[in-house]
Length: 240
Image 1 (tube, one colour):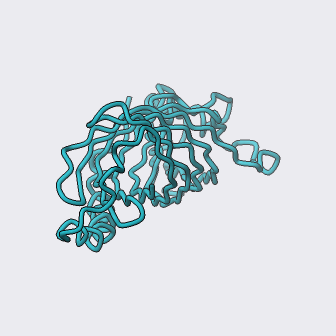
Image 2: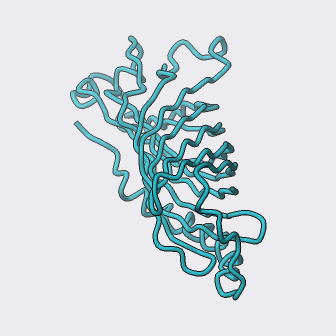
């Protein structure tokens, strides 16, 4: 049984995501050096609301089936290239104590994922999946001590995603069928930047699905798959 090498792909996309993250935070860090202490009582409130915008890089995690390993058909490889996407959603943050928050982050993701199949005669075929995901993450946020107008934090938790393609009637008969419901874990880090009127928080988060989205059928494209999971690197811009 073979699996795609996610570590190598994550490394290739890490530099791109990190560059965007640094660009987004560089200007905001100027607030930290100011003598004015912005929003001094912000963290004393129990409940905060906000919204976020995000960009992501995402791909399927592919595990081939025993049918593929035994070479029962002409497919020689299956790969899942990384693609971009966008997100928007809302922030509900509940203060548990000075350093810990519970965050509920409902949102919508727009993305495209692909599976590339290669055959023994060196021909290729690509199956594309255009998704709109409704996501519901529940996260715990552990914050450092505030210094001036900035503080760092770690974040982690789980999420549920519901996918809707909206064009099932247009699918080809041999198109890989996917479960609309998936579950995963998320973790990452970010910076709270306190401005005069609001708090801005750039954040990088990694998501790894642990549920199998591939549905079995009689066609070779699905029979060659044991499981498909969702993997994402996301750059968030939170406004609260």
